Length: 120
Image 1 (cartoon, helix red, strand yellow):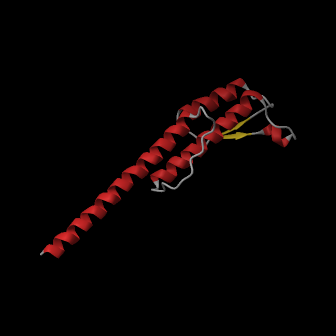
Image 2 (image 1 turned 180 degrees about the vertical axis):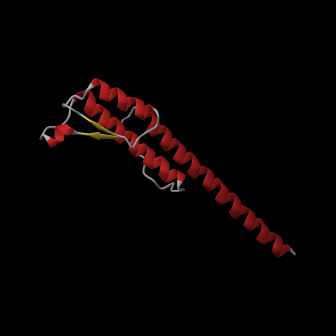
Image 3 (image 1 turned 90 degrees about the vertical axis):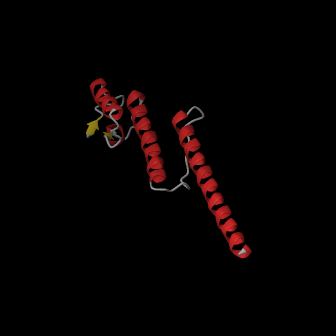
């Protein structure tokens, strides 16, 4: 879905449609920043919506990396108050800790098995 900003602040009806689509989980909505095509940068609520969408897309990319078993992905918080970013960092660290525990248990099991083989 492509939404157009008709002026640098955005139109209320357009912003409402945008918010509804994002609330449904659609992060592939495109906002055309017409302010930039006129040599100006969009301002106000419209610019904030573009920033919010960009931030959500970055977090979705982090989640996709984790889902693809890449726990080396760098998680950046948008601000000190970024709760979603903080939870992503916590989730990534927790998954890394679980993997470390599994690897440690497997190594210990193999070590125990090799000692048992030496005793026989």
